[in-house]
Amino acid sequence: MVLNRSVYLNRWLNSFYILFFISLYLFFAPLEDDGTEIFPNSDKVAHFSIFFLMTVLLIIGRLKKNYALIFCFIYAFFSEIVQTFLSYRTGSIFDFVSDILGITFAIFFISLLEKRV
Image (cartoon, rainbow, N blue to C red):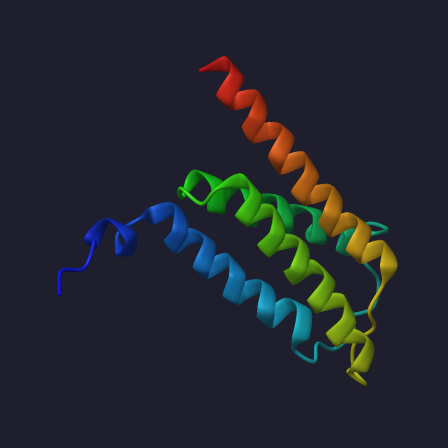
């Protein structure tokens, strides 16, 4: 059996895997409240950024846009639903909206880059 080494050596997908596991920790680990935020709604910026980067990395890593969009949408939905059942976390519709905006902006960003090339 011959394995396609390019799949395993794809730096974009490897970067996605790293970001995905970091996001799992950030979304589901019991984190202590450190007091005041750096700026208001910094968690919404984090949600937007994580899903923007994950979507971009998947698409640049050669995953079809539709599959990247579906995966990221399901992950965003799943992460917020699971957080509602965790006693130390809270799911938020506003976090979900931030996730979806990150995904949407990533799709538009990639589309703009494709049109320029």
